[in-house]
Length: 304
Image (tube, rainbow, N blue to C red; front, side, top):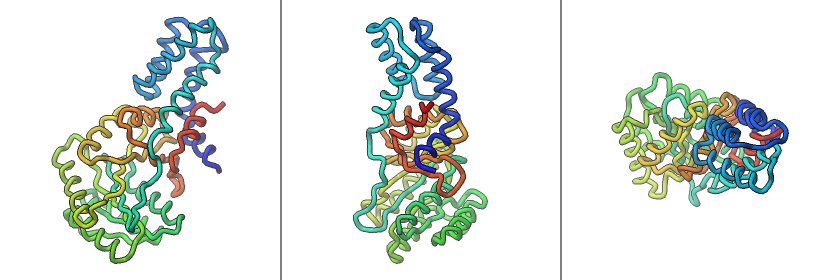
């Protein structure tokens, strides 16, 4: 299955909601009045594109309406596609690789977003490129979290640096960085405990982990990635704001796009936060974490 087909399959629910709504509001061709524009804006916001983006699309449709009395639904869809693509192509969507190994990637997020699975899938991608990967199990609080990463390590044949339940995550990451250097790993992927972005003490703990990494490798972490569950919709914006404030995020991994109609949140977050989407999760398999491609993503959202 090609990348476009993966996006199309994974974004099916988002596509159905957004595409079908626009088709319903603008059947065929006809005059667009104020009521129609209000409905259009409401449907764009409901798809979690964000108020700013919805307003921008509606304003462009208004401008076109003054030039032509009637607009076909296909023309409105074309307007939305162009504006979304213009928004999403900005930013560096690639993973920053350290000039001198190891590349250190810190993965954070709230509970239940799929951090551990995303770390494993990211490790798999590095391995496909022929790189040696080391995993760090810094979620020492959730029951079976270390075991979950160790199982992934066994499947991927990647070493996992871990400690006992309740250990200090900063101590684990200290050992992991030393091990990555000593074992000449190309990449160190760090799984952290899920934490609510509203808990100040837990955010401080993440900052401590970051400081420990930088003491050993001043340029690291080379990526600080927030894992967001697409189904949380606009609440993902709040998570991104708080984690970015504490961590200085470099990008996002958006998971569970295949199970939600709220894929538009990708657009809203990138527009407000100016944080590039690095990967999107389109399924449960190990190779279902895909590099974000703005053009393929938008085409899949609006594909006939």
